[in-house]
Amino acid sequence: MSQPAGDAAARAAVERELAALCRWAAGLRAADIPARVQSQAVLILGDNIAAALSAADEPELHAYHEQLIGNGGPAQATLLRAGAPKVALLDAAVGNGLASTWNELDDGYTRTAVHPGALSQPLILAAAEAGHLPMADTLRAVVGAYEIGTRFARAWPGTLPRLHPHGVYNTICAAAGLALLRGYDAAQLLRTLTAAATLVAPGPYSHPIEGALVRNAWPAAGAWLGAFACDMARLGVAGTPGGPYDVYTRGLGAPAVPSELTDGLGTDWTICDGYHKLYGACHHSHAAMEAIESILARRPDLRGGRQVRRVLMEGSPMAMNFDNAAPQTTLGAKFSIPHALAATLAHGADDPRNFLDPSLADADIIALRKRVAMAPLPAVKPWPLDRPARVTLELEDGSALTAECEAALGSPARPLDAARVLRKIRELSARDAPGLEAAVVTLREAIAQAASLPACSAWIADFFAPP
Image 1 (spheres, rainbow, N blue to C red):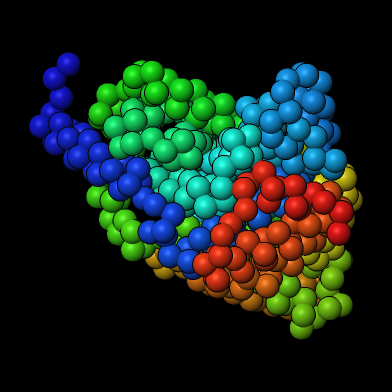
Image 2 (cartoon, rainbow, N blue to C red):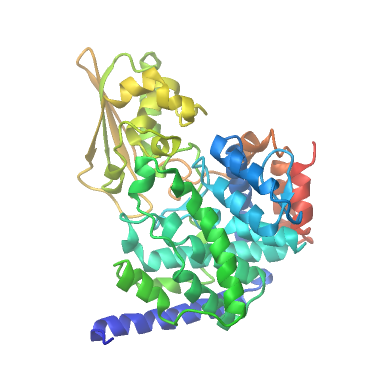
């Protein structure tokens, strides 16, 4: 099939830049990664493990974990839940992948929306634990998969807002992590990624907004398909060198920006540009939640929302998509700005019940959701200030109070310090993995001191051990 000259040139550029990305990633050694980057990788890994642990009691997830435990396979890798049961490698990767984004507390990357940690780390951890591989190798795979996942998303930003990144990059991120963990050379890694690109799931972004829980399964599916792509590549089964262009541009309609696949490799580490969440909701609601809290700090008598007649939230064009005022599932609540703001008014942004099942029937939240209106801000700055919010509370007495938040705490513009991330890890993991915070701290200290690092299996055992 003949293609226009411009299309052929863009495809050739993708082939060239993707090959260069694979040469760089395959040649990356643990010693090449600066200590600050490895330390950040440990913090993100701990944050994502804690996020997965926090979801262990969700009924659908708990039931699936019980099914995996009942499979009776070899005890190779740990399910992230109370008791640390061991299951087969792929069962652990899929089970932890299902948990990774369930509570919306995993890390993310905002230059273009993608969650490479949640999409790659369940498979990396399971394979590294099963193989008793060193944490140095594990962290190399964590960092490399983050680079590859973010660069794919930056090379095809036009998949948003139609398609959700958990679907269109799930297999890419997982396959990249396992291929690097296995030590694939550049040719094997290229075969892996060209195969993985054809196995992605074009999940609609409307699904989480509408509350379709299958969205939580996309990282799990990526773990299984990522392993499959790696196995196929080892046997010589691959896509074409320009396959990612065929999928993302010709198939999914996203124009390619090939230079993003390699720009700044080895100097601009994308794992250091991510964000950590303080609230279990879509990140586009966080600035507005903070703005409300700043008003309530001045007027604590407004807590509960009974004096509030109307809430106007002004935000980015992307934020306008999250306007479902009557979510029917916990996922829908997490992707509903009206629900997030109503829960913040009623109970406070930090209340852990805000997005759990009982919140869907909370009379105060339901009443306040109906009073939330949304409108786009007239001007929004470029990244990392591209998710601002201005909130106006119109009161029953006719007065109005307004507050703005240019960027949410935890975003690249206002990053959390390590102490605050560690506190979050401790709060989420204290019951089921009481040693997780200490294990993260100890590993970061070893990196800072250039000391030897433990095996991944020993590190995981440490954070499930009683204090």
